[in-house]
Image (cartoon, rainbow, N blue to C red; front, side, top):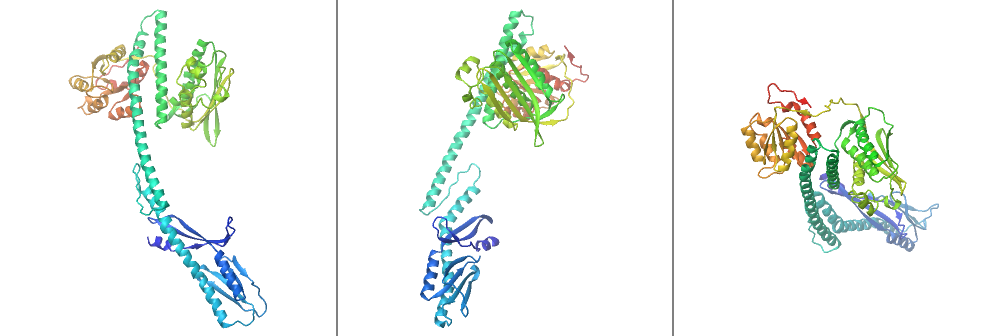
Length: 582
């Protein structure tokens, strides 16, 4: 604080300069000001020297003097009849801390003592008057302008996040009007923030409910289709069931697009980083899109300039989503010709970038429509949606994911000729990771018991069919309370736990299961939920779930989870029987 008070007593004077607008000679005085011991700003006052110059000139003319006034930098402020010659008497006087200097030459060789004393007194009186003017100006500016502004800045800096800023100021002036307006805007913004938070919360709750209410019945539809497709069917029956299953998968892809964009919009869309081989994505591209192109009579081309065995460190699922969205659009909007994808790499500033180029000979996009195809819920033309379907979110999601991966998306297109999308994303190259060899066929687990906790009877039927096909003995209950009772009364090797249930939900039931006495507390437990939001998944994992399987349940995903945790399945058996491969 002592240093602050000392600094507040310092003033800094500029050289004399000419104002570019008034063409009047000016001088500026500046002084720092502090808040809480920290430098907060500088107050400045611009002073016109016009009156001073006129006064010096008039005085010099009145007493027939030659006068030259200079500032501390040697800049001439005013000069009047100043000439030196032999036997001339020149007087010099410097003004204290301002270090201005006045030089006076008498027109006669003999100077009358009275006139000389008068001139000296005038010289001495100029600077104190000027200093007084500066101090008065500084006081007025500090009191009426700087202090209120510092008060506003202090209140804003001291306010906590989400706190309404209320500044009290008594004077009725422009600063009062500014502060009143500031307070009103603060209250308004806080009210709008509360509304926005409530709207976001309601939207999230709605999407979570929408996801659950759609995924739950779709679990029954797709699960039943998967079960029936294993039976002996006629070709016509298999065709119908396959169509049913693919239609359900399409519906789920549309729902996932809406949920993904909602996450992006709310800033909850995150990337998961891990090492993965590029060949795993290339394999999926070949197996899926080559057959889709064959069905439509299109030629499919895949060209990769990337070294075989290349591994990257990044989000494999989101990279796959970018490629699949672009290829799905290319196949959907192309009636004849080809669909091609090219993969290559480039380096920039020691960073590695993967280049994805998807080209087709489809319907193309008009130049005036290119600017809006990356906007959510939009397609190039309204009739495109009616003809080809879709939510209009695919490209918007591609652009958002690419930007999250420090990348860009470019497009070139011509109506009737086709389109070419070029995506550039940053991906670090990494060393190959040893992969566990996965069995090519599903395993069975004879002699193991599973507890299915599910309040939907259709879902119970689906899960029981899945698990019995794998050799499990099944026992089902309808809520979390019954699940805890069943574990206390009987022994099981696996629990499949739904989340949304009456009496006690899956998260609470899982938490209480982990608090049971051993060995029940160590049982392998999979969360099976139609709520795919990350918050719900994290809550179930934090409660004690070993893995999460999203509804609608794909049987191969269930097989992968069982394979991953196969050792824990047999933890309660002294001499475990190894699972057999069908």
